[in-house]
Amino acid sequence: MPEEERPAKSKFRIIRIVATLAIFALLIYIAFVLISGRGLNLERISDFLFPAEQVEPVDELHFNIGRGRVFTALDSSIVAAGSLGIQVIDYGGTELLRESFPMGTPAVRSQNEYAIAFDIGGTEARVFNAAGIISSITKDGPIVSASVNDSGWFTINSREGEGFRGNATVYNNLGNRVVRVSLSTGYILSSILSADNEILAVLNLTDYGSRITFYHGLNRPYPDGTFDLPDVLIIDIQFLASGDILAVTTDSLILVDPHEFSGWEIYNFSDMRLGGYAVSDNFIALHLLDFGIGHRGNLILIDHFGNPYGNLQTDRELISMSLFEDSLHAMLGDGLVVLDRGFNVRLPDEESPSAAGVSRIIALNNEATLVAGERFAIIINTP
Image (tube, rainbow, N blue to C red; front, top):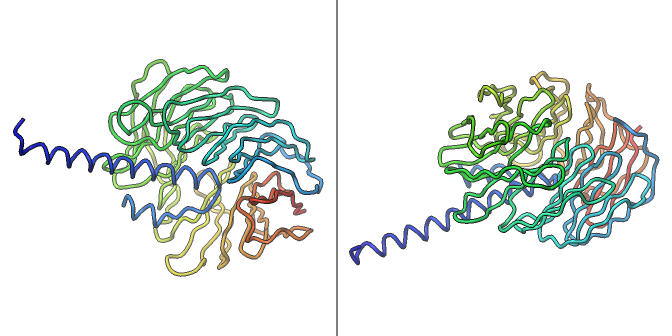
């Protein structure tokens, strides 16, 4: 090789490494805000890329698992993951499970009676239910995201081996590896597994936009098809009860057929900015902000076909929101409210904590909400 070509190739290699590390940092940012329940700063991202149980009022729930706490519901209990590990506590305040393992950026996802806690950018993950730890996983490279399905099967997306694009690994409900897939193009953001453990969908970002890659049968590491959205950023995918996949983009909601590899738009909000969203078995809640200064926008409830059910204009900051069936629980800048399908407002029968200290709320059922922050976690009734 001529001597004069070496500096150019070296410069190109440095640029490629910097670019891939920057994209990996973006993936970690998106995964963190989605899992933690914090609002999405989609302007920053776009610029970068272009059954119910009655709950009685209880005293403060005592989660002692370090800093950076994130929460999720687990069957009839609550999970907190922090820098020191995880805890599962029932609604009455009884600790059901504690597992210690350090996490720099704690994250937790759940589906009915199963949950997975993992360290974003770290290498450790735990799969569990209220009865105990099901599996402990240590990856060879940084974890980007993870998910678990109704059957307790789970996926972990990490950056391992050569290159920076990453891979998605599927494990069964015993913690045994079933399949591991790597993509030749695009950076893996997340992956999800159907409830029957037959379809793996991998969301990846390419040089041209977003792509969902499908694997059927999980018996070979080769894709059966893809759904591509050029020049569009898909930030999240979820399997719905219908078997279709909900794809959330920066300006619309799209349903994707995992068998036909085709999609159709059910709701467009390109004239507004997405501040947050929540999904239940039959409904989707959106927080849409006007482009401009302040918090003026709308809370909207639609079904999985895009049919509208409720719309509330508000100029208050949205801290966090959660959806149980058709009941939308929202922590606004001046307090907690609960909106039913017709968007009638119910207020709590007791004073809720100052919104300034709240990082996440979780709708436990139609009439109770977990309100949590870095230093507290309490259940508020909203009859």
